[in-house]
Amino acid sequence: MPKARILFLCTECGGETHRWQGQCPHCQSWNTLVEERVRSAPRSARIDGGRPGDAQPVSLAEVEGVERPRWHTGLPELDFVLGGGVVPGSMVLLGGDPGIGKSTLLLQVSARLAVGGRRVLYVSGEESAYQVKLRAQRLQEETDDILMLAETSAEAVIERVEQIEPEVLIIDSIQTLYTDRLEGAPGSVAQVRDVAAALQRLAKRRELATFIVGHVTKEGGIAGPKTLEHIVDVVLYFESPTGLDHRIVRGTKNRFGAADEIALFRMGSAGLEPVDNPSALFLQGRQHRSSGSAVVAALEGTRPMLVEVQALVNKSVYGSPQRVATGFDGRRLALLLAVLERRARLRTADLDVFLNVVGGLRLAEPAADLAVVAATASAIRDVVLDPEAVFVGEVGLGGEIRPVRQLERRLAEAGRLGFRRAYLSGTAAAKEAPVSLQRVKDVGGLIDELFG
Image 1 (cartoon, rainbow, N blue to C red):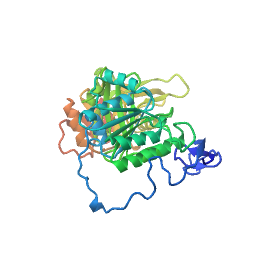
Image 2 (cartoon, rainbow, N blue to C red; image 1 turned 90 degrees about the vertical axis):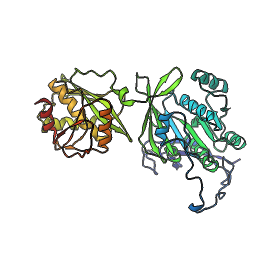
Image 3 (tube, helix red, strand yellow; image 1 turned 45 degrees about the vertical axis):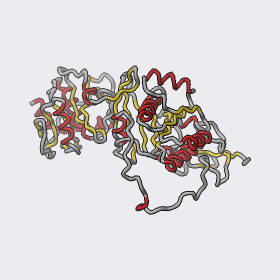
Image 4 (cartoon, rainbow, N blue to C red; image 1 turned 135 degrees about the vertical axis):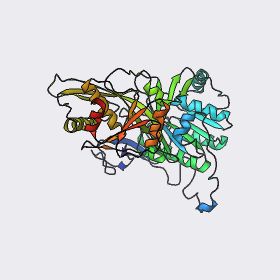
């Protein structure tokens, strides 16, 4: 048996060094090297039993199955994030905090794919078959056709896949699988990297749609080397705003569709239920008689959504005023406050400013600038804004309001939910809009338009 070696592996890029360093020499990340014992294996040996050189080159003209339809998971919201459904041979990584519902979601997907005639193998390294059965009964899903395997050995899993020949493989989770080729505990950098690479080769060779559950670290990233996200085809993050019963599945990488798409689910007694109208969810409970409230027509991927932005200001009692933002970039908020004071002559230097995006959503696009400015100005003046108005536009350092992309889709969503007017850039091109357009040139013009 080959002798084990001590290496230092980078949790970001998976690079190897023979001694510890503060900075990874491969990706220049700081404090990412961890010590692991690695036993080398013969180059000809692989976890999946294949050997280098097995694949043969073919011309693209000989490749068939390009028009093959995607498989629907039975959850339209998840199909939307995946780009239209499951692609045969694809590899999907689902990450999220413990207890958020990753296993529940994949068990529902497994049940509905099995009902649709797909052969599904569910591999659990964290629960026994009995425990999975108990969860399946609570979900009230037809799970009789799902093949269940409680196993943590990667070699044993691949052997069963070769015997059973499933069409869909669920791995729950990648941190529990290990290979005898390497030393170290399951979930270590080397183990996760080699097992994921073996599963990828297996998925491509057998046209096996594979879903992998990944645990999340305290920093919010998926545990294991960053190369894990590069190996897979789709990366989904499962998020749950604190204190709310809805879940957000956010796509950060997708080789078969648009990235940055989101899907919303509500956790119920029968599992996760898709939310058909996300805008109505984020606007529910909105107070129409409170100052400091504005609605932005945001865009998540290709999906327009209306989200309420709330601002609260108060006279500062400390030496330096506070700037607290939830769901919005704090540095961007400081920039917009400086623009308000300089270009619109609204004094903010001695005020504590608190900003909140309702519903636990994160607004990262510049189109939310105008709603943030309007909500903050409303809070400073203590004047209620028009409850039937939406705001969409980017604010520049000169105070100018700039147009944003996909304006027609945003305005169509606003009109569908009963809004009657929209504040936007004076140079924005909107051919047909179901709402009245209030064009403003700069921040000063917006303040005059809103408050006189």
